[in-house]
Length: 360
Image (tube, rainbow, N blue to C red; front, top):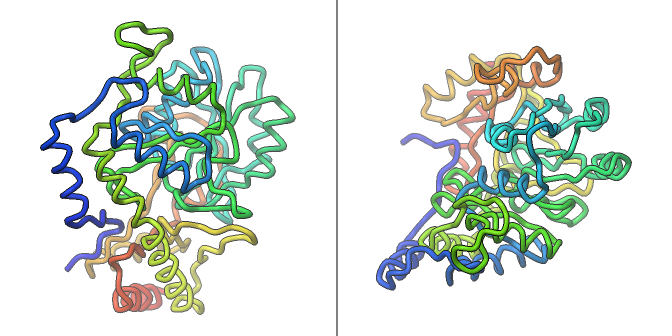
């Protein structure tokens, strides 16, 4: 049996919730506040991350797009982002007409390098999007200093970090907005979906319009918007998943601790959360010079390991920019992510560790 790198964990509870929506017949709502289950989910997830508001949308990408539109990012603007991330971070910026400016990362946790970030600021810079990659929390304190110094708003790409905290504060709540994904591979899923967290009432009101073609009451668009609405079926599934999330996170943490002990004598660079950081263990990512050989052997043994971002965004065919990002290039050739989701067993982890030692 193959062990997937990540997998949605669903049972009868989610099926029952989805069926209730189908039987009711209200599959979505164009009301400003959204449908019944959208509203229930928004309140529950806001309570979980301890933000004042949450606005549900139909994908993590839509969350980023809506957040950028809420800040009036437009053509001619520049937005600073890491290149070592999923393509959606950059594509969301491009969709507004703005230009993504790629910043290097830190090799200790693969998140944006604050020093390089500050160097890339120009008179056209309008926002910063740090990515809490693999669940690792970006260096938010330093980023906060930079954002205040240059008066730049920050949108957290928290797609992979639901449940991660720094000094007991959740990702997605450090700055103006946090953008999350509920894609099937994430720690919580609604099938497809996403949401934006904020403590700013004006931003929340704007996001509610943006997700619904800029409308408030029917056909009365006040600002630019698109159809970013989350369907009721997806919201219903998410309302069940949010109740299970604490146990999901406990299982991931347990598996990460087991794997770290098993790999304590490994030559690979293991993940090591910094003081006051609590990661959600979306991915257990190591770095090794034998990345290719290790990936091949793990996959041959039906272990769904993956080398994410082997081609950083700035080197993809669509962007292809001559930007020097040495740590990004270093990570792209060495990192490999291992499965530690709740369905992974002790025997699975022991097999993963054995293969790593064999390759070394």
